[in-house]
Image: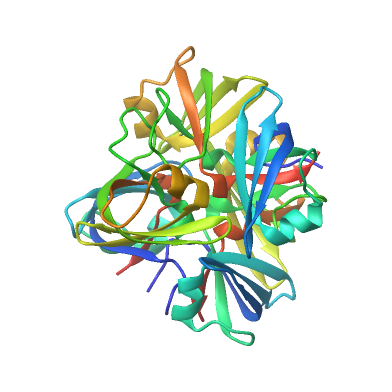
Length: 139
Length: 139
Length: 139
């Protein structure tokens, strides 16, 4: 099955914290980074997720924000530092490719944001991803 | 591959409108409804999407809003009418199951919203999904 | 540090409702509106959020829907009335600027939606934002 979801990061589940309807799942990515996913409890049960499970963290490009440096004091759990490798600009939106440890990310942000942040190949950035935007698949 | 993404609706691509970096893809679902996905142009190319392609529309539960009736004059492209079949409530969030033509949807909304809308089994609702939240897979 | 997240609305936390893994946080914005964020409980603890905390509500442009008037009976918690000031249209997407009480919002919606809603400078709209799409930062 091919997915339109551009960002598929392989990793291993570190922990699962179940709530009544939601669960948070921490995953150690191949590049060593830690990522948190907030998914339904039902999904955790269906996929049989537990510490040690091999998974992929899936993130739609439109859910990846970019910052020009680490962001302190923010609720966004996932921050992956990287380097911009390519920027394509359209009439309203821009598509930015970022190399991170262990892989590559695609981010779709507004053209305005890409311009204001001065994003060009070589720029150092931090990709920000809210936990509720991270899906998981069995690898 | 199992996915944590609860909502996977089979359908057929009706049209693809390419922009410079994004594309909108219209899909006719098995239940007859039309759904629009806004994905990267790159994804459209990689998946070889064109009119007639068989796909699945993928939507994370946290991206499905619910209304008690159709909503006019809104930018949200996707409105799927259905009937609530089950509600599970946690401390902050609620998980609502909705039967729609051709399938079932899972929606994760705040507990407050579920209470205020009086969502219980049998309630008629319309599921609202922003195009930027719809991913596609080859079926 | 600069962020690609276009929407950063200053406010003060009114209440925190913790669940097992998620929490809902109500914030009074500078313009007087109330906004609800659904974030991980861990984020609430890390940021030390409680009634009275000064925060910024962060919302990615792709998460802001627009309606031509208030929407009743919907699970979407956040509705901010405003006036369109600018529209930029690409091949697939449109970027819409909206002035709201106390600030400005940027919304990225499909071109089709912008056309159908007749969005041009001066149009009255209501920005709709699902709670799960609102992140928070310490101000």
